[in-house]
Image (cartoon, rainbow, N blue to C red; front, side, top):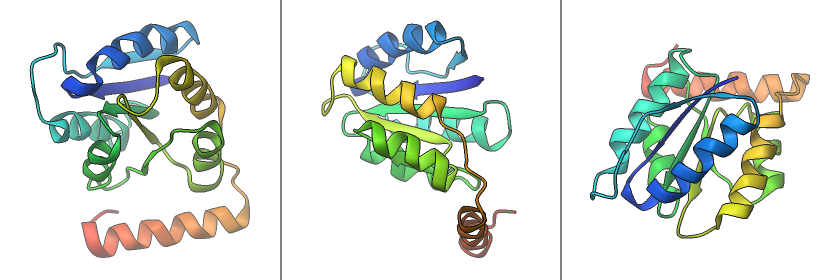
Length: 152
């Protein structure tokens, strides 16, 4: 699976560690920045990753900032992106299975590398269930996007 990954300066070190981990799981990864510890703004990278997912250039995205909150808020402004902060494995796989979550956000100041690996493994191994109730809810989410974000 092709994965788009990005971070701001606060998530840079964790992103660098997770790039190799995700590749080691057999995924192709595009590193969309940042590429240093220099202070930068998370919306830049949330947009890059979100657009890569929304335009089909990546199947899923991973964003890392200090808390995970800002990256999630920014990514969810892009039509077609369903981003969520997950600091546990249950939410990471359930978000994909039930809500077709396609962007995972992590807080580098909240969790460490070992937990991040477990969360990423759960997120990347999960698939959307396709159950009627989940499809119905996803259709409702798409209707909200169309109504409020101009999505299709």
